[in-house]
Picture (spheres, rainbow over the protein chains, first blue to last red):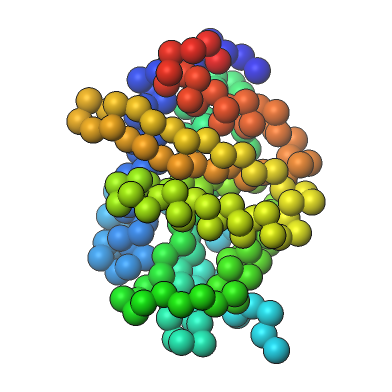
Length: 49
Length: 168
């Protein structure tokens, strides 16, 4: 595995987004946030099965 | 006798749902997650990585119901029919209950037949975001035959190392 691309600040931002995405999706599942809001945040729900 | 609840995919909303015998609805969503992609170079292939969120849509008190975990385990097991996909599950500690949820998820996995073909890695991530201390209990699940197994596993394990300033 290449190791040169690891950047602490980039990872921090990615972790924060991962957490924010979960909050947004939970809100959506509870009917408090619209699908459009998820889309605007770059969150794409998928049918995996 | 039921072994699990029947679940459906709501194509308009994009999530799976099922109702328990007490008419409590559970919703399960899968969505693309690019966290691990940020840990590797642009030219490194990871395949599809998704995050899963499970939510109970009710204010009723929770009661033990083994069919709930059986249903969710089945949804996850079917997810891994696509053996090159990987799955991230996170528990936020903002309500100080993350460890309990994390432990429940761990028990579900350990008691399932998925242990035969799915590897589950745990990683507790903690760092100062300048606004607050973020603590996340995270798990990564991936199929033993995933073609990107080593890269995905290394990327996940390197998150904490990178955040703590250690060499990946």
